[in-house]
Length: 260
Image (tube, rainbow, N blue to C red; front, side, top):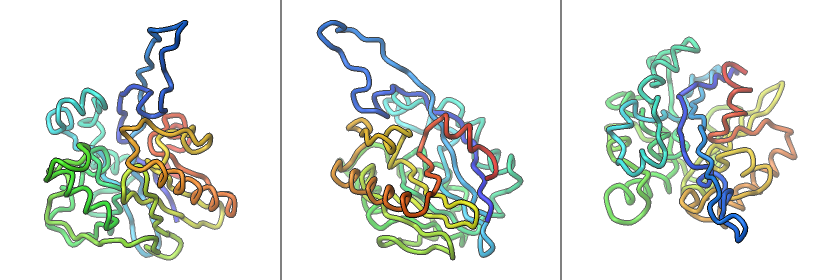
């Protein structure tokens, strides 16, 4: 079972979104310099004997015009058009037609913007029940949060609704990790040489997972659930010595990029 990490470009944003109050004013320094950083955007191809699975579909390549202006100002995906899904798949020798199934970890705009590639097909798209409910609530009413765009996911898709944790194919288990969103999914991939745990946006950066530092409040739907999901992943890591993959950590992405 080979894993191919796809380069979908970078998002530029204030570090305080990723690490809560990383830069804060103090009495002696009332105007600290903010940290404006770049963060990795990635998808994953899981080449399993039973299916070729795509993990997430990334940002819409027209993000600058498709996203609401305030969101693009806060999380600028300036190279989305250069690192579209077809380009990223081609870099590792795949095309959209090779994909047998899609897993949407969640439906935020930087993760679900390529779903249109699978509209009108019979390719199953796996998503947690709580996530699709929250996405439609957010996109169609004034409740929820503004990181869900109906133009990303309101398509004729072969939705496969996940309830809790479940095996996708032998050796690939989907794990419900609420916190960042109500229905975010991670995964436990069991391999002979080294297990992999996909934490995804449960941990924007390594510090969120390794040090237990929360993301900024705008990126956490439920702090208590987030802490419990981190403990759930930590327990699996202790038992399996798995490699844990974070959501947007640029240093880890550079180390893992490609096939592993």
